[in-house]
Length: 294
Image (cartoon, rainbow, N blue to C red):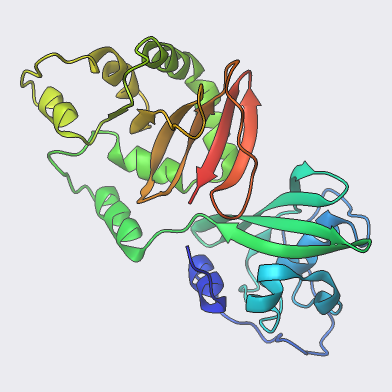
């Protein structure tokens, strides 16, 4: 996925405020940042300066790599948000002595977006190296609006609207949905693992569509897994040869960009978060994780 300064703006649907790069106006914090404090120059503080404030006077000293090359002249994302936007305090997803990943929730009107910031420590200073968010083409949101207005797509799974809404929901809602349906997800993963030669089950494939319409599917090894999958808002369960032993449950998305759950029993190595593939991974409970990928 290619990123440009305009992509940051479009992904949020934001409108530029009066602050701009080089502005001498006093920085102002957007709403939604109460309930905690951040140590100055910590990775969380650097992240919050970029999203939560209308200006970051020392920004040039806290950017590097991809971010510095592409966005150093843009100013803060907080400067582009409408005054009514709410910006959460950053949440640490991973942190070591040299690297950190933080999540920030930005809410504007009826839209909520989760942003992930990847930081590196260079010569004792925490710097933003990259930022990502899971964003889809306008067609995705147009289709979702149609479903909300009552449109029906005959060959689509009956949970399509729920799937699309959950995919773009806040991280907390994605984790909560899993907790509410953990037994179904566990049963599905167990049924899938019981068939080691089965690479994946997709509710949008031909066999699944035939089964929904009551048509016979010869030698249907997928039936037990499909039955459990169809009881959730997820659309696909699959294996990935790059991550042996892991089970991935895709909620929804477009192309390779999607949100989902990962089951990581013994033998599965959870992939590290990075701005190029798994942009978000967070443990929910047991061997289950929520994730987003590009």
